[in-house]
Image (tube, rainbow over all chains, first blue to last red; front, side):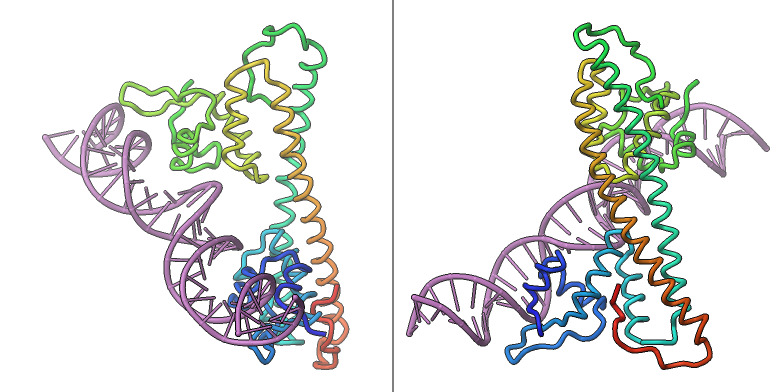
Length: 137
Length: 137
DNA sequence: GCTTGATCTCCAGTCGACTCGAACTCCTAC
DNA sequence: GTAGGAGTTCGAGTCGACTGGAGATCAAGC
């Protein structure tokens, strides 16, 4: 039923340090309850939420924004419009990142093709490639 | 023919601070030449190379790796295998980032759909959505 | 001749997101 | 009963990549 901080760390991929830090930063839905010895007891719901947090963080959502989203979720129904707005704004960021990554992939593919051409074609005959255009597309 | 640091900043989108910083970090192909007053004079080649750097940095290549790549380029022909290896390793990183971004996009699309269902269907009748599953997929 | 604006060097500060360490408290197993 | 391991708090430290500011120099335009 309840999970220790170590178990949650193992399941979410976050460190115990980070779990405590996230709690303090307000990115957990409810105050984490404690056992008789003062140790944190997480629920399955916490783990589900943290999985969402991990995905949003990995895509570059800053902690303050994640906190805001968590606050909306904590408030419960009635603020769906705000949640959509927040998610759509992050979506734009993610789309822009994808664009940049695709651009980088194109660059890499092109450069690798050029280098492999050199390696395949003229592997043993060194030093006759033009020195110009090292930075060219 | 030659460009001032301000012009290069305008063209690459980097700040003049960052341009000096990059030079010091060794991510420029050759030592930047100076005019009689000691001011940096960049070439078109520098700008081309910096454009490559911007793309690689935006896709998460760390500066030390960018420096290594720059060193290979500076050395000239003969190290194509190493360049390919470096680029392929970055390519794996980029592919992993794309996977994470797609995962985030799926999450956002799903959540936005759920919220818009609520907004469309039951906009005026509040408080009858089940409180469970806030973190559910 | 004087101001303005761009540049220079150098060093320190910032920012976000952790990450670490010290000193302590528990529970469990041997 | 004691050693080990997992947990606690708190404040400080780290890391990467810039970013800012002080103080000097120089060229151009009025």
